[in-house]
Picture 1 (cartoon, rainbow, N blue to C red):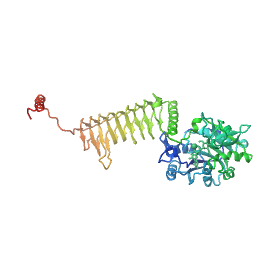
Picture 2 (picture 1 turned 45 degrees about the vertical axis):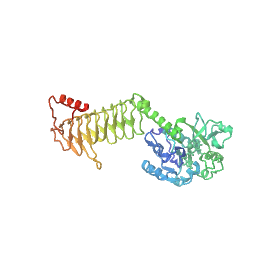
Picture 3 (picture 1 turned 120 degrees about the vertical axis):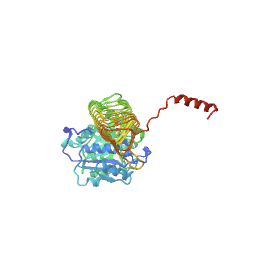
Picture 4 (picture 1 turned 180 degrees about the vertical axis):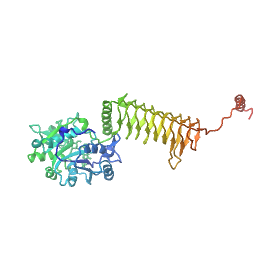
Length: 465
Ligand code: UD1
Ligand code: MG
């Protein structure tokens, strides 16, 4: 999340109202629209992060559809925010009116954001704020974020006056053919002075095509009162609103493009950037190399110089400096891969720590385990951490050697420098430095192979048993 440029900071107090009450009908979903995710974070989460980056004095979320779920998500993401209910969905103006009690006694600037618009940038918001407050005497009473889309379609149109100020906003459904030809559109994001705008908000009427209280009518109301209204422009991508699953995919794609660019600018090599999927909170160090087709779920940190091979999936884990993971590795929550450690192909690690230099190179599962420094885990080693009821831990000491195809039945510990023979099923602790063999002793019968073949051939021919 970008910081607000100092030059655009104002000493106007800020309150933010996030509109999140919409029905989201076109998502065809049982999940409220604001809780659908982009980059592993809910749409609401993106907007609340943007809001919090502006350090508002007050923050209110207007919820309606799926109230309880939206309210509890808000409490988790922004504990200081007020959640107000809009029981009846009577329009964007009505929604802001519902938030008025949360603005009681507030003097400053109110910024309205939509919970379904996750790509807005901090510096754009700062420019909008500055249009209201930063200009001092010359600042507008209301400023609207506008854009010029390739297809203006159903957006509200920004009608300018002769001097480039904003005269009014007309919704597409209420617009004349001439007004619809205007390409300058309303993003929906706006800022206005408070409590000055309160009277205008109270005065909104629903006598329009949709029978709703339009927040957009505030612009004309301000002008009627002789107050200046202005437009601040931003790129179309930032205003992308999610209304259906296609929009959600478009927002995801835009988010990924941005996140990949940020990573590469920060010194990360993405061999095939368009195939790497990042989360909102992915942290990648300098000189990290990511192969093709790697997916980062939430909560991943990869430190400097580490390498993540193709087709790996990481989530809730830390990869320390210089470690190598994959190709085809799966790191699940609680995995911590130590400095210079190696996790190879078809290895799954969950809630387990590999200390520096430890190696688990092939076809293994390490769950609820600690692996000491420099230990070597042979191919096909499995920690049997679950008995159908509880989860148990496996501890492997530094420099221990676990032979291939070993089953470690937890809870169990293998001491420092111990050696476990390949094919063992380890059910009891192994002392440091000890050798453990836990497999049937091999029996070899010389010449028996030929006798066996003769026996089987006879059987097949039906001439013997
Ligand atoms: C709105 C703008 C339009 C602008 C467009 C940009 C109005 C009247 N129109 O139209 O000028 O071009 O956004 O996308 O504001 N919401 C509530 N309660 C309500 C109604 C809406 O919380 O009663 C929320 C929705 O959840 C959504 C946002 O407000 O987050 C916008 O509502 P929506 O119905 O999508 O407005 P548009 O018709 O798209
Ligand atoms: Mg909309």
